[in-house]
Image 1: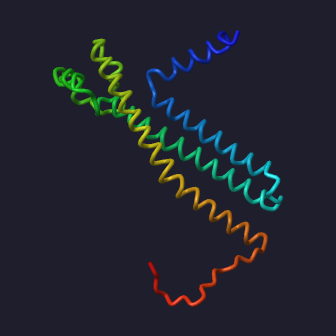
Image 2: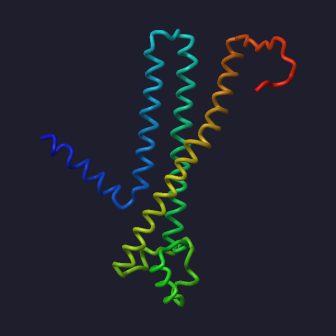
Image 3: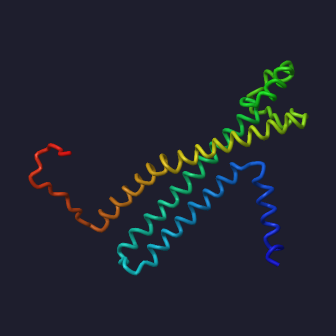
Length: 194
């Protein structure tokens, strides 16, 4: 019974992601960001130690953080994946066997390589060349997607998220007329001790 229920979704997953692991990386990343964000919001929402005033500040902040995390991750990784795929599909980047094929047929393809209307999928008829090309393209787009996910998650998203959180915090402080205490440095003479 359970085997039959899982058969269709598992077949769909295998078919959708087997030739394009970078696609799987993107969607598992989005699912991971979404579930962790929902868990964070749920933890705030159902925490009895937090006052309603704290929740009214923290829940919108976490929601905006979630949107920044998920949106930036998806846009950057998907953009990188599409860019890399296009470089491979147009022959701008190709394995040596495919480059040799294009060189041997330069009278047909030389002026078209790298153009958006040129697709190696339409040109390569030899099964070995097609396999080399697809393997090379799959590896290249996967590495590009991993690199873009690292860039998005660890560099760009924190910058955007912190900027948004800072603006939200300032708006909240101004709306509630909260006085933020400034640190008092007693006997500070301007020199730093190490």
